[in-house]
Length: 417
Image (cartoon, rainbow, N blue to C red; front, side, top):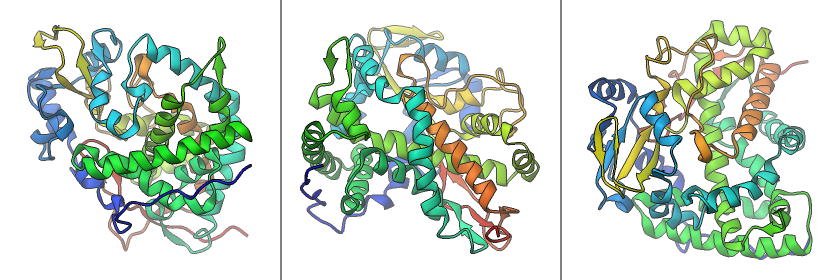
């Protein structure tokens, strides 16, 4: 492959976007009781979810009337009716950060371009990534602490490993990885810090355009090369849409997987009987993953806007309003899930909305499940007698918009012979 120019850091290299998680997504310990109270009062409310829970308003949506959608039936109706409930509202925030992303599109553009992207995420390719990308990423991180007998699984493992996989997917030069991650995460601050969000977006855009040119000239088996040459019915992806997808990849693929894996480990470690069941019978891993995603999925709120004046569950919604669609409320709706606040990997299977639903269902959901499966298997294999560290605070899942524990302190019996 040819040489790439170095990726450019922020004009102020001291700027640290990694401290902005609470500002972007909130630090609420448990929003579910309040969501339940609102859900009991009705499925649609005319107020802004963020400000109602004490988070700063999204400056990109400040001029729009705000509504909150709660409960399984109402959330499902919104997700499954893209003609009425449009994704175009994301152009106001995701569009600033990522550009012309498929997340901001409706039909006919959305299905047209999504079909081409899906060629890079075919099941056989995702399965192969499990061995070629996921396993090496997991191993490189775990070897740093697997012989120590104690670790912080978030700070030393889950916070890093999905991003390690993305670096391998993109085949980035190792020297670029640190600044790349910094810029990618900074795109999420646009809801309250447009200047740094747009600076990050611009610098990643410049970098990705050069990267695409280089991979078109010298293709490999990396994701950039696959997308640069993907076609459906003779149509390939325009550079603008490719760059927006690559900008979004770290946050859509890495950030949510880090959160989901951390929540899965929290659920199992705080329920040792279920952890032991999974340790003894690995066929339980898929249902453990689905329960973790349902119980406290990484993305609590999605956003939609009515394309026309409409009515939802008896409440009139004006065209162009900002709808906060509470997937987390749907996933804990007692009309669909018995004792919904309980983490229970043995509960009856029922579809959840952790990856949304309908035509905008997460394109990377299968890869996320592969990553979570292989991470959990490796942890169970290499950290014998894994348990919470009794001398450290237990994990606390936090977040108002997106959820994650900041620490999972564990002990184990040391390295295997």
